[in-house]
Image 1 (spheres, one colour):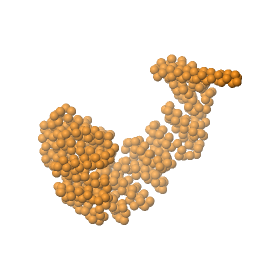
Image 2 (cartoon, one colour):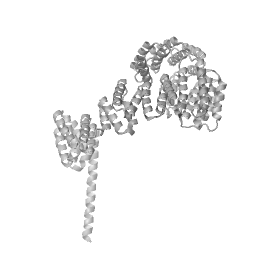
Image 3 (cartoon, helix red, strand yellow):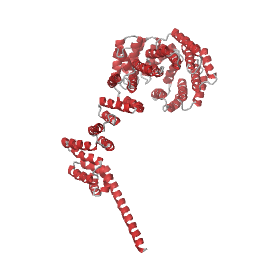
Image 4 (tube, one colour):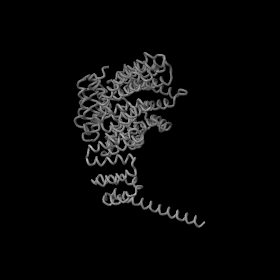
Length: 607
């Protein structure tokens, strides 16, 4: 019995001593690391050297200790230390790679290359060790060796697709874009379900026009060689959309549509993207193709709706707006509703028709009647009802009944919280407060909307908020800002001549006010819409020459290019303006569209 008690007591003493030793070691490691972080190098080295005598401490001290030895030029000490480490951890890939860092630091290129080449060969049959080695090479910025590790392993494993994502990322770091793209394509082909991830990565990487063009050329070659591979075609359509070459995207998508008998489903999406980006010509072309080729499908109904919508946007953005064209659009909407009947597609057409009556023909009661009919329609989709209420609120504001407007906006805001339409309602209430000159209340709404889930509303909120803040800080009376807001309301109410007269008076009285460039920009926009294109360009030139450094500089230059292209039909002058724009404002929100317009004017799209 006494023997067992003695044994247990001895074991207890051993455990206590071991625990005490471990605690002492842990404390010493923490102290050494603290010396390292504080830059007390000699103290850190002395303590690390002592700790390194116990192999169990190596994993906890190695990174800091070895780094100090290399960075302070103690190469002989580093070599002795790492060789001792490798006796205890002879197969540890991390330490094997670190051994070669001595050659790297000493700039002994031949020894470095010979050592790492042999190491990479020894690891290349083991996929797990290959990944560890390549990652550690990359962490030490030895990217070429990381590449060699993956490429040799790929060759030995007879798998041309393995490590493609890792290789693509390394080529990306090294800015070797052709090889990067090839590996991303390789990865996308091997993992088709990750194709959208590849697109997202490429969208962030291929930011220059030349990069997108090179990628397009590569994909065209791939599509020709591998005509049955739909991934290449999908990516080619995607890159065409990135370049805003909607006609080229349509041609590719049309071939896919025919091959897989999609009845226009993919084409609808491309047409909508073209419409959203203001390429009305190609949007109309795409929707007309669907109407002609798929008359017995549901896509026919959608395309019938969207082709009129595209024509509507084209008419509304051709200045001055032709009222006869508006009447033609209303007639087309009537024909669509008569042909198809009232359903989820055509009710949107009915809404659009109401807004044309109200904002372009001054037929307010007709518009109100249509929208009230939609709101009262049984079993109507809630989002359509809410949108119709917002439209109705806009019309009441148009005819000077803002209390009716805010009532409708608030109804939608409360019934559709945290939704896109709910945020839109809140923004309309913010605009209403802005029109009234109640900037504090407007800011309360806008501060919430800056974090809206929809980027468009968040951006609009930010823009209006900055307008108010920038132009009320030094003008505590808010007098001039209220005058400007009133002009904005007149424009919303389609009273362009009255708005222009008020704006000119305001401009003449605030030459030194921070609001001046905003006033000039708005005056230019009104003149464009009235068809006074030369006057609009003169005003834009005032901003371009005197305020090009300010937030409206890119807006003014871009709008000048559009007027020269669309209204004046001076293509060569427009080309010069768009070229200047891309040089001066490469980060502008208008850059992609300016590039598309420039390429169209040069004939790059050949459509």
